[in-house]
Every structure is written in C-alpha cells, then in structure tokens.
Length: 335
Image (cartoon, rainbow, N blue to C red; front, side, top):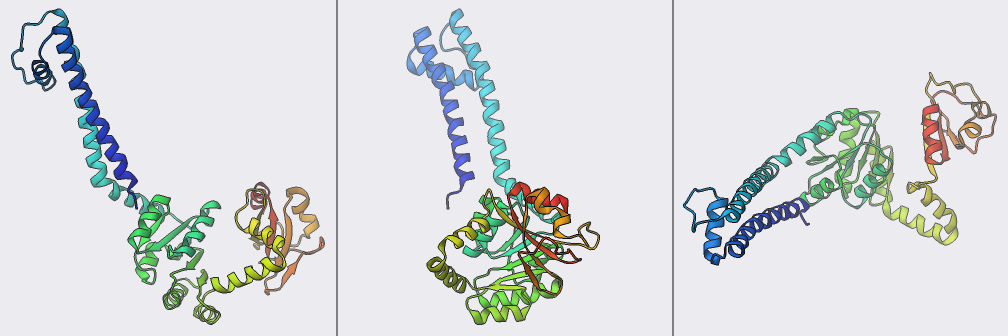
C-alpha cells in the first residue's frame, strides 16, 4: 500500500533541494554574466556568499557586483531559514506525528457515547463502516491486521488495535458506553466467543453477528446475539427476489443503501414522550412532517404493519417510518 505521507514528505524535500539549487545557480549566472568572471570563480563566489564564511572576494567588484552580492546574501539567509525550519518540522512530524495522532484518536474514543463497535474490518466490516459513516453514526473498529489498520487510518476511522475477543480491547473501545456491536471476524468460533464476552460485559447491548450458515446463525443467537445473518443465505434470498420482484428489491436497496432522497428510520416512544396516548392522526407526523409511518413494533413484539390513522402510541413502542433526510431530521427533533 502506498504511503501518502512519505510521498508528500519526499516532494517537500525535492522542492527544498530545487530552491537551494536555484539560489546557487542564480548567483553563479549573475557573477558570470554581470562581472564576466569564469564559471568556477562565479560558483566559488556564490558558495562563500551563500554560506557566509567571510572569505576574501575572488576579484575586485564594482557597484553592480556588490549589489548582486547583497541581494544574494539576503536571499540565501531567507532561503536557508525556510529550509531549516521545514526540515525540522519534517523530522518532528516523522517521529512524533503517529504518536500525537494516536493520542488524539484515543481521546476521541474516550469521549464516545452510544456508539457502535465493529469487530473485524474485512469485507463485511468495511461495508458496515461505510454505511455508518454515510449516516454520521459514531463507531469504533477493533482489528489487529496491520494492512487493515493502515486502511482504516487512511479512511479516518477510529479504531482499537488488538484481538476483538479480548476483554481488554472491548474495554478500550468503551463497550460499556456502546449501543451496538457487530461481530464480523469471519470465523464462526471467534464470533461465538466474541458474542458471549460482549453479552456478559453489557446485558442490553444490541449484537449483530456474521455467520457462515443457518446452523451457525442459531449458535450465535444462543450465545446471546440479537440478530445473526449469513451472507450466503441473504445472497440466496436476493437472487430469488431479483428473479421474481426485481423492482421491489431495487427500491429497498435504494432506501437501505443510504439514498439522498429517501431513508428508513425508527424511534422508541419513551414514557415521557408527548406521543403517548395520541393516535397517528392526532400526532400529525404524516401531515406536518411528511414522514410515512409504515409500522409500529409493540412492546410485546407484535408488529403493526401499515397502521391505520386511529392507532394509538404506547410506551416502548418502536415506530418505523420512511421519508427524506430532511423530514427524518424534523421527526427526530419532534419526538
């Protein structure tokens, strides 16, 4: 993988070299053509002037020659000061920048609340991170492979380096303050162990696990995962839907993929919410905000699909809606 920082530093050094070379060539050409000196005398005079060693002048100089020397001295002082400060900053950045960057990242992780833990930055983990980034949701990735760590750094993701199945790494990622965890280690045994550990560390954590088969899905659920998905099973479902209802699937992909004009959302009706006891019609969500309510998950688990206008909101109901990003933002403020 190309190190962009190293390439940028290399170009800085190249620019500094060209700047120094430009000063030396300017002085050499100036002495040669202005005073009609030989090339070696012109180069020597430029060198002793730029380096300010104070040696005797090569030849007697008239007024134009002295003016050229003054300009060359002042220019070289400024150029050398710029080169030295730039080189010093490069040394500091090269030696201390990774340390400072890591401290800043750890500080950001330490301030997170209600974030998500993405365990594993493989194909599944990357897709999850891309969607969460698009929705501006806070998350921390736990990964130990060096190539993936560099990819996350370039992407600007917060991450913890280490084994996701180790409790210490989960603590560093602030699992106690997280609202959800994705187990995407790519290995069923590791994912089961991770789910068990995460469930013991936080009982109300929402855990979604990757699984290689239907049987593995059951094991993940028994281990404590709230949801378990097999990419092979989901892939088979998508293929069948593409055969039978491609346009409906395209619409769902449009919504689930973080479309710019339509998105899904959900919110829980808390006990202190002003929606408690109100009907869908009186709440005015569709009328005033433009969000279409497509379902209400009751506290007992029953799903009211396409609820009628006289459906009443109750405590702990989970309301599912669809609308534009601006309408959904208004809805979050409303509730």
